[in-house]
Amino acid sequence: MSVDLTGSFDLTGKVALVTGASQGLGARFAETLAASGAAVAVAARQVAKLEELAERIGAAGGTAHAVAMDVTDPASVEAAVENVEAALGPLDVLVNNAGIAVQKPFLEMSPEDYDQVLDTNLKGCFLVAQAAARQMKGSGGGSIINISSVLGTEVIGALSTYCASKGGLLQLNRAMALELSRYGIRVNAIAPGYIETPINSGFFKTEPGQKMVKTIPQRRLGQPDDLDGALLLLASDQGAYMTGSVVTVDGGFVLR
Ligand code: NAD
Image (cartoon, rainbow, N blue to C red; front, side, top):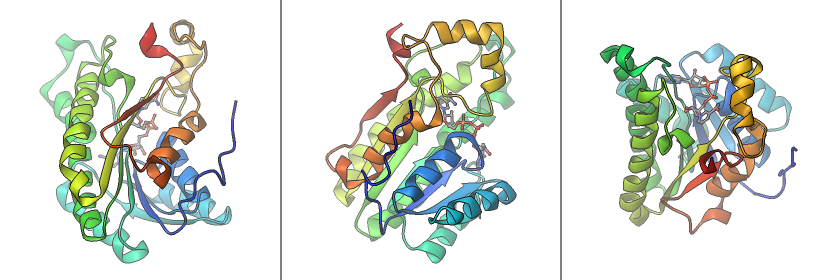
C-alpha cells in the first residue's frame, strides 16, 4: 500500500544530502525529500547514474545536484560536502545511506571483507556525519539520519561483518545525538527490515527468498516507499523533539 505524503511534510528551503543515492533506497530517499521541497544533493562514487536521477527530480519540479563521493575516503567526503555547500547552501539534512554487505560464513570472512564493510557502513557514516555536522554547527543546526538495519540488533547467518557495522552505527547514532544536541543538530536512525531493492529482488524471487518472506509477520517484503514516513518525520521540523531515536520499519521482523 503506497500513501502519498506529498504536502504532509514541508522541507521548503532546506538542503539535504543523500549518500549512496545512485540506486535503491538512496534514490528513493532523494526523490521523497525533493518532492517535499528540499534541494537535494545526491552522492555516490559514479556520477553518471546520479545525473540521471538529478534530471528525473528536476523534471518532476524538484531541485537536485549530483556530486561524486566515496564515503570511505576522507578527502573525497570533505570535497563533496564543500561542493554541496557551494552549489546549494549549507546542509540542513544528511541521510547517511551508502552501505554494502559481504555475504559469507564467519569462518571464511577475510580481513579485507571486514575492512570493506566496516569502512563503508560505519567509518563512512562517521566521516560524512562529521563533515556535515561541522557545517550544520555553523548554520544553526540540522538533522542527521543514519540508515542502520534490523541487523543492527538481530543477527542472521553469513552476514557477521554487516551485522557488526550496523550495530556499531546504532551506538554512533546515540553518541552523536548526545554530543551534537547543543548545536541544534538532531541525530536519528532508521532500522529497515527487508526492503525490495535491485540488490536483493532476485534473491527474494527464489525459494529460500520466498521462505524468508514467510517469516515476516506481515508476510510481505517492504517497498522503498514504506520508509517515506519515517524519513520525512526525522528530516522535518515535525520531528523536532526526536534525537538519538531508532525508528524500526520492518513489518514486524524483529518480533519473530
Ligand atoms: P544498494 O546496494 O542498492 O545501494 C547502496 C548504495 O550505496 C549504492 O548507490 C552504492 O553505489 C552506494 N555505495 C556503496 N559504497 C559506497 C561508497 N564507498 N561511497 C559512496 N557510495 C557507496 O542498497 P540498498 O538496498 O538501497 O541499501 C541502502 C542502505 O540501506 C544500506 O546502508 C543498507 O545497508 C541499508 N538497508 C537496506 C535494506 C534492504 O533490505 N534493502 C535493509 C536494511 C538496511
